[in-house]
Length: 140
Image 1 (tube, rainbow, N blue to C red):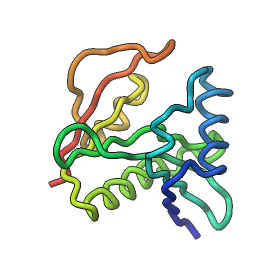
Image 2: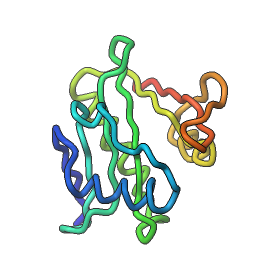
Image 3: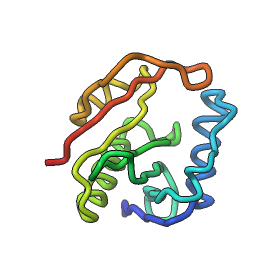
Image 4: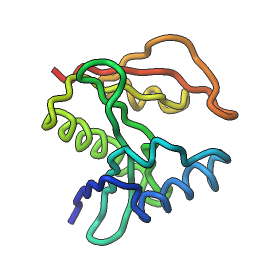
Protein backbone atom coordinates (compact mmCIF):
# COMPACT_ATOMS: atom_id res chain seq x y z
CA UNK A 1 0.00 0.00 0.00
CA UNK A 2 1.35 3.42 -1.01
CA UNK A 3 1.50 6.02 1.74
CA UNK A 4 3.15 9.40 2.30
CA UNK A 5 4.64 10.26 5.68
CA UNK A 6 5.48 13.84 6.64
CA UNK A 7 7.96 14.76 9.36
CA UNK A 8 9.20 18.11 10.63
CA UNK A 9 12.79 16.88 10.35
CA UNK A 10 15.00 15.16 7.78
CA UNK A 11 14.16 11.50 8.22
CA UNK A 12 16.75 8.76 7.76
CA UNK A 13 14.76 7.41 4.81
CA UNK A 14 14.76 10.78 3.04
CA UNK A 15 18.45 11.20 3.74
CA UNK A 16 19.14 7.77 2.24
CA UNK A 17 17.11 8.51 -0.92
CA UNK A 18 18.81 11.88 -1.43
CA UNK A 19 22.27 10.36 -0.93
CA UNK A 20 21.53 7.63 -3.47
CA UNK A 21 20.03 9.94 -6.11
CA UNK A 22 21.83 13.26 -5.76
CA UNK A 23 25.25 12.27 -4.40
CA UNK A 24 25.95 8.76 -5.71
CA UNK A 25 23.97 8.88 -8.96
CA UNK A 26 24.21 12.55 -10.00
CA UNK A 27 27.48 13.58 -8.38
CA UNK A 28 26.36 16.51 -6.21
CA UNK A 29 28.69 17.33 -3.34
CA UNK A 30 26.60 19.79 -1.27
CA UNK A 31 23.32 17.95 -0.78
CA UNK A 32 22.41 18.80 2.81
CA UNK A 33 22.07 22.37 4.08
CA UNK A 34 20.57 24.58 6.81
CA UNK A 35 17.14 24.40 5.16
CA UNK A 36 16.94 20.74 6.19
CA UNK A 37 16.82 21.88 9.82
CA UNK A 38 13.52 23.73 9.36
CA UNK A 39 11.84 22.18 6.29
CA UNK A 40 9.08 19.60 6.39
CA UNK A 41 10.07 16.29 4.87
CA UNK A 42 7.88 13.84 2.93
CA UNK A 43 8.66 10.23 2.11
CA UNK A 44 6.53 8.03 -0.12
CA UNK A 45 6.46 4.37 0.90
CA UNK A 46 5.20 1.14 -0.60
CA UNK A 47 4.30 -0.61 2.64
CA UNK A 48 7.52 -0.04 4.60
CA UNK A 49 9.83 0.50 1.60
CA UNK A 50 10.85 4.14 1.03
CA UNK A 51 10.78 4.99 -2.69
CA UNK A 52 10.68 8.80 -3.06
CA UNK A 53 11.06 11.98 -1.03
CA UNK A 54 10.96 15.76 -1.06
CA UNK A 55 11.11 18.68 1.34
CA UNK A 56 9.06 21.87 1.52
CA UNK A 57 9.15 25.13 3.42
CA UNK A 58 7.73 28.66 3.41
CA UNK A 59 9.04 30.90 0.66
CA UNK A 60 9.66 34.65 0.67
CA UNK A 61 6.33 35.70 -0.87
CA UNK A 62 3.04 35.66 1.02
CA UNK A 63 1.43 32.21 0.68
CA UNK A 64 4.40 30.79 -1.23
CA UNK A 65 6.00 27.47 -0.40
CA UNK A 66 9.13 26.00 -1.93
CA UNK A 67 9.40 22.32 -2.79
CA UNK A 68 12.81 20.80 -3.32
CA UNK A 69 15.04 17.78 -3.24
CA UNK A 70 12.36 15.71 -4.97
CA UNK A 71 13.94 12.34 -5.64
CA UNK A 72 12.78 8.87 -6.68
CA UNK A 73 15.08 5.89 -6.24
CA UNK A 74 16.19 4.54 -9.61
CA UNK A 75 14.49 1.15 -9.22
CA UNK A 76 11.09 2.81 -8.67
CA UNK A 77 11.11 5.30 -11.55
CA UNK A 78 8.46 5.11 -14.25
CA UNK A 79 5.67 4.54 -11.71
CA UNK A 80 4.55 8.21 -11.52
CA UNK A 81 5.87 8.53 -7.97
CA UNK A 82 7.25 12.02 -8.65
CA UNK A 83 3.75 13.13 -9.61
CA UNK A 84 2.36 11.58 -6.44
CA UNK A 85 4.96 13.38 -4.33
CA UNK A 86 4.06 16.74 -5.92
CA UNK A 87 0.34 16.09 -5.43
CA UNK A 88 0.94 15.24 -1.77
CA UNK A 89 3.08 18.31 -1.08
CA UNK A 90 0.67 20.62 -2.92
CA UNK A 91 -2.23 19.25 -0.88
CA UNK A 92 -0.28 19.73 2.36
CA UNK A 93 0.55 23.31 1.37
CA UNK A 94 -3.09 24.07 0.52
CA UNK A 95 -4.10 22.67 3.93
CA UNK A 96 -1.93 25.27 5.70
CA UNK A 97 -3.16 28.15 3.54
CA UNK A 98 -0.46 28.15 0.87
CA UNK A 99 -1.41 29.61 -2.49
CA UNK A 100 1.64 29.00 -4.67
CA UNK A 101 4.63 26.70 -5.09
CA UNK A 102 8.08 27.39 -6.43
CA UNK A 103 11.07 25.16 -7.10
CA UNK A 104 14.52 24.99 -8.59
CA UNK A 105 14.30 22.33 -11.32
CA UNK A 106 17.19 20.59 -12.96
CA UNK A 107 16.85 21.59 -16.61
CA UNK A 108 16.74 17.91 -17.61
CA UNK A 109 13.56 17.59 -15.47
CA UNK A 110 11.79 20.81 -16.47
CA UNK A 111 9.42 18.92 -18.82
CA UNK A 112 8.25 16.78 -15.90
CA UNK A 113 7.42 19.89 -13.86
CA UNK A 114 5.73 21.60 -16.81
CA UNK A 115 3.39 18.60 -17.11
CA UNK A 116 2.47 19.19 -13.45
CA UNK A 117 1.55 22.82 -14.15
CA UNK A 118 4.79 24.60 -13.23
CA UNK A 119 5.94 27.53 -15.38
CA UNK A 120 9.55 28.57 -16.03
CA UNK A 121 10.55 31.95 -14.60
CA UNK A 122 13.89 33.60 -15.31
CA UNK A 123 17.09 32.29 -16.77
CA UNK A 124 19.02 29.05 -16.46
CA UNK A 125 21.62 29.02 -13.66
CA UNK A 126 24.04 26.49 -12.23
CA UNK A 127 23.75 24.68 -8.92
CA UNK A 128 27.10 22.96 -8.56
CA UNK A 129 27.70 21.39 -12.00
CA UNK A 130 24.07 21.19 -13.10
CA UNK A 131 21.81 23.59 -15.02
CA UNK A 132 18.67 24.61 -13.13
CA UNK A 133 15.68 26.86 -13.76
CA UNK A 134 13.26 28.52 -11.34
CA UNK A 135 9.64 27.36 -11.78
CA UNK A 136 6.36 28.40 -10.16
CA UNK A 137 2.76 27.20 -9.90
CA UNK A 138 -0.37 28.84 -8.53
CA UNK A 139 -2.42 26.35 -6.52
CA UNK A 140 -5.76 28.08 -7.13
